[in-house]
Amino acid sequence: MQCSCGRKAVYHRRYSGQHLCARCFRRMVEKKFMETVRSNGFIAHTDTVACGVSGGKDSLVLLHLLHGLQKKVRFSLFALAIDEGIAGYRDRSLPYVTKACETLGVPLHVRSFKESFGYALDEVTAMKERVGACSYCGVFRRSLLNSASRELGATKLALGHNLDDESQVILMNMLRGDFARFGRMGTYRKHVNDQFVPRIKPLREIPEKEIVLYAVLAGIDFDFEECPYAPEAFRDEVRQFLNTTEEGHPGTKHALLRTYDKLYPFLNEALQPSVLPSCERCGEPSIRPLCKKCELLDAIRDGLARDDQS
Ligand SMILES: [Zn+2]
Ligand SMILES: [Zn+2]
Image (cartoon, rainbow, N blue to C red):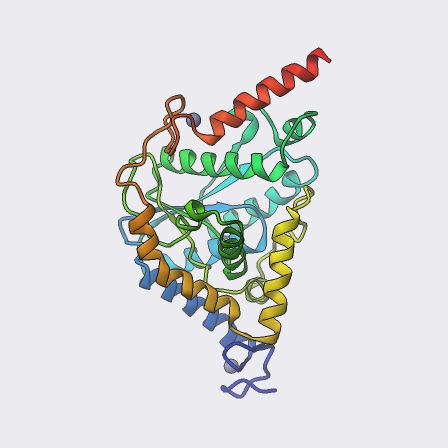
């Protein structure tokens, strides 16, 4: 098959019916990224953007694209990596982050769970009474990404969530009836707390497999390994369902995201408090008096104490 430019096609984009050569494919991904940034007003020249990086394909492609965007919009950019303390995983993926930042000349900051909270994730998951690793990890990572971005002077926090991630979470929240969380997934949030660094997701309209192909074609070296802690089963089922549906009906994931985006202004209006309070203990934005991170830290301290006694 040939690309419309006459070169040999490397990718069949089923949801648009296009066959694309390597060059046109890369341009198409870059254009989609630019359109998402522009149409949502994600980045202005006055912004300092913290790019959350893990060493995986999504965050390194995002860093690469943000760095390219700096030629057009003169914002400041730095990378922020979180070391959860997962032996054999994060210590292996961080070198990919270091290498990418050195190649692009983007400053890198690393924050660890151990230094910030007193516990590495492996210590927490070794406890006898525990909830899933992903619950701790997700809460701690979100909290640390926000506080570190703020302390480092960022005005936006860019995350590498792709179309597959976004459509999975939309459907999961809907199927669980988690209306509050369902209402918090949109691209724009009212200014509700000074301590909150607004999050932007410039890859939200790009499918996962296009991110992988872009990384390969652009020569971006990334860590293929998945986190050793098993993902929750429900997410896997939703992922499989969406992939099967997309296979039979190309464009399904985009349609789900578009539906959500149309609903979002109403959800935002109905669900967003005009002011989001701060946690009484740590000062981070939180709906409840004690934030989820502080609550989990208490549970970990108690759990570890009980383990010591037994
Ligand atoms: Zn072409
Ligand atoms: Zn707190």
